[in-house]
Every structure is written in C-alpha cells, then in structure tokens.
Image (cartoon, rainbow, N blue to C red; front, side, top):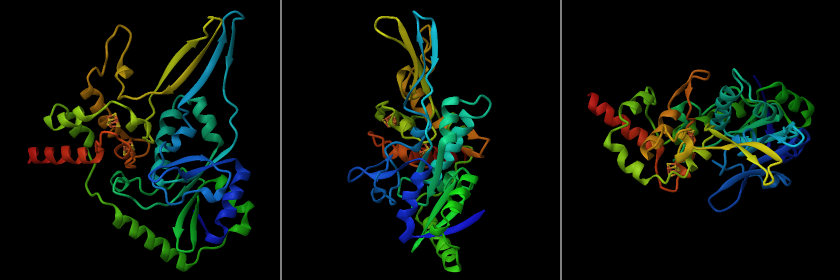
Length: 344
Ligand code: SF4
Ligand code: SF4
C-alpha cells in the first residue's frame, strides 16, 4: 500500500480539489447534538470531529426512494428511468461505514447486480477518515474498527496533518495529479500514527465476544429477558434507517389519477414495520412485535461469509437514534451472559 502525508495547512486545498473529481459530500454539524452529510460548497464547513450522521452514507448508493421505470398505458410505452449519475466524492467515511458498504456490495452486486446500486457505486469516490469512539461505538467487537479495502483514500489524524493510505487506482490518480499537496511520511508520522491507534483502542468501552451470537439469540427468543425491551419498542424503524447495512426495500406500482400512466418505485422498508412480513392472503410472517424486534437482532448477527464479519459493523447508530432508549449492544451482552450462566 502507498502512504503519503498531507499537512493541516494543505487540507482545505485538498478538499477543494476533491471537487474536481465530482460533487463533494461530507459531514457538517446541523445542531448541538447532530451531524449530517450534505453537498459541500464551503469546505470549511466540514466537521472532522463528527462520530455519526443522521443518515448513513448508504443513502448515496441506495436512495430512500427511487423511481425504477414508468409506463404510458395509452401509448403502450415503457421507459427506464435511470437517473443521470454524476461522479461524486464522499469525504469522511469511518471504517465501520466503509465495511458496511462492502456488505451492501455483497447484497447488491454479487450474483445479480442491481443496476441502480452499481451505477452509483461506480460513480462514487470514497475518502475515509479516522475517528475516536464514543460510548455507543463497539466496532472493536465486530472487528470493523479498521478497514483494509473499500476506499480510495483513507486519512488518519496526526498532530500536524494526516497520514493518507492510498487504496485504489482512483486514489493513486488523485495523489499523482496533486503531488504539490502531499509529502513523504517520516518516522515521526509513523510514531504518531501508532500512538493514535493505541489511544483509540484504549477508548473503546466494550469488551466481549460476538462469536455464535446468532445461535444464542435463536435459542433465547422466547426468554422473558426480551419482554420489557419488546414492550418499549415503538416499531418506528429508526434503527434500520440509520443502520449502514440494513437494506430492505419495498416496491410499489403507482398509477396516475387518470389511469393513463404509471410508475414503479422502490423505497426503504423496515423489518420493524407491521407490513414488512405481510403477504398476499393476509398471512404475516412476523405478525407480532416480538417477532419483528428479534428479527433485527438475528439478521444483524448472521454471518456474512464474503467478509468474515456479521452484518453489524458496531457503529452504535441504532442505539443512539432509538427514541425508546433501547440499547442494542447491552441487550446482546445481557442475553449472552444469561446463556453462559445457564450453560454453566
Ligand atoms: S428505533 Fe428503537 S423504538 Fe424504533 S423500531 Fe428500533 S428499537 Fe424500536
Ligand atoms: S445493528 Fe446497530 S450497531 Fe450494528 S451496524 Fe446496524 S446500526 Fe450499527
């Protein structure tokens, strides 16, 4: 892997030049408590210190609502409505979200590539950014706190700038076309990089193992330990919307009011919604709130063989954004120790 350095004096020039490679999206502070990503005009607005955004970066690759095609019934015409996708750059993705995107790749690009997703994936440049965890982060447990592939450039904070890992041909192109911005890494930078990583590891609050969690969950689904948590849940779907790896969508055909034209759209769905498991004939595969609540835990803890991880990347968003204060990780830990006690 190639490593270069960019100093703090040049970082805003670098961000400005990223706009030469596409529309620039990055995190900005939108209130005392929240950050979100948006298209950047003024690069000094970018919030380097953010930990999580209201919506994960998946929204740039899987739109919350997407028109797939339309038909003109009178003329008998069918028209694909693929949006014109322009190149874009996402600055500031953390390691867990980049792994999340790779999990989505496994879903959308493997056997039957999804053209809507693929076109956006091909158009996007990913610039990662190192971070320090808060009390909600547990990517150290899901082994997604560091990422080896899936980015074009990855910036690691140093006292006087950033150590940059170059992770793709596009990353090399950006460095080669802007050599005046970069310099070689020296021993002080390597020491600072190592110190940052050590400090970061010490800041993680959680220890434990997720091994075999899915099976423990399946075996304890009926346990009364879940009762109170299920009762508290509003079924609002915040946890799935803010999850970097949740990917369920629904499809609807919507005719115009005069019945002459119609369009097909797809939009984000949530396993926490009552209608998610409802099928023709009125049967609901997840008819109770308990079914729906536990479905998310089991789905997230299934093993993704493509990457050797679970479908949870440990970002903590589902807990942070839950209006019922349901703590995903604490629930997992609770059920795990219960099972260990029982097995003991
Ligand atoms: S965000 Fe919380 S309240 Fe809403 S569906 Fe998820 S667990 Fe339930
Ligand atoms: S389940 Fe929760 S912690 Fe895990 S990836 Fe999704 S939002 Fe993040």
